[in-house]
Length: 446
Image (cartoon, rainbow, N blue to C red; front, side):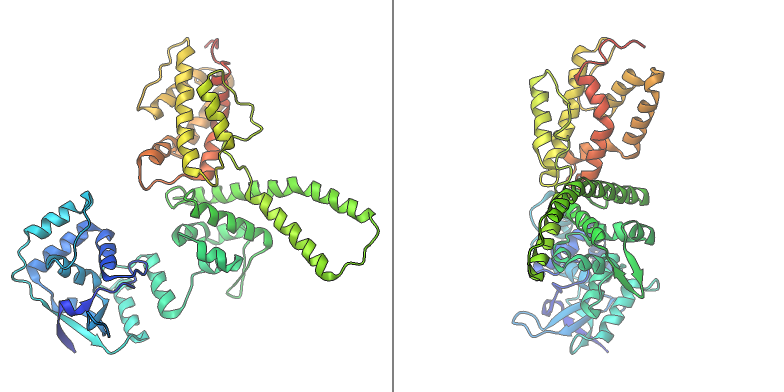
């Protein structure tokens, strides 16, 4: 049965599945508006023209609150638009809201009915939520569809159900699961059997088994996501994710192997000593300390973009200082700073190259991509000895859109640096940078 209720008695749900739970109705409305501002304007325009139609009925539940009598379980976007049109919410002062604010100010709301059609439920229950889910997930539904993250929120609240990705992360530790800032990016890293098998995850009888080494890999991935170095933009394809997984496995395994000889040496020296009467508790404690020590070494792997053992050097004081900073800055802790400084370092090297180059290379400001490619072409392009290096580095830079990303780290609010890609960039460019700084290219003949 449809009831007509005054819109002002209904609360926009702060726990709407379209966004993370928030504290207030105003916060919930801002989230819904930010989802797509152009969609909000379109929905407001339709509401002015047609009003609330019965086929767009709200689903509400009775709500014991001082301000509201009902809470919207479904139809929160439409309710938000109605409250916008009647100026029940103040938009934040920001350029992105100007078009919406201008539209609201110019809108004629005199013909909009404040009484809206609602299906009223006494309390929240599974049957009601199943109906809502069907509207937003089913291909036959007319409502704006939920994305995977929104479906996950629904399943978690209503059925206490977590995804395979979440169960894998929780399998490492509850603390790691609670710290994970972006489940969607983690989904991308674990969304195929191929990727999970590469990480060593074993699946049987609807259960996942995580070997100790796999837990270290998962922890590293979560750490990179939380630091902003791994995002859905930086691993936006299957090859990208597989390459990233292969890289961290290789790096972490190398770190473990390098620490093993020392451990074996310690174990052999301990074996020569007479057996002491130690309790099992002390043995367990010693083993626990070894494990902790090993994990600590793994987490400190390749702590800087330029390895401290690198022989890169320059007779230019400024470039030399930048090299030392890139050796000293932790790429795990200061990923943004390292990314931006690395971009500056590349530019300084090209400017330095231009200062002594004898065969027509000039540095161009604001054209880093073209300038770098030009330098590579002039340096290696006609030399058959270096042709393979030249081809490989250009392919890598183009395929990974490296310069576009480096520019994005500075100019794009949504572009986050990827630790693995930064290290790959340096590794690929290291020979070229070294040739520039040591002036090996100064007298090169083509």
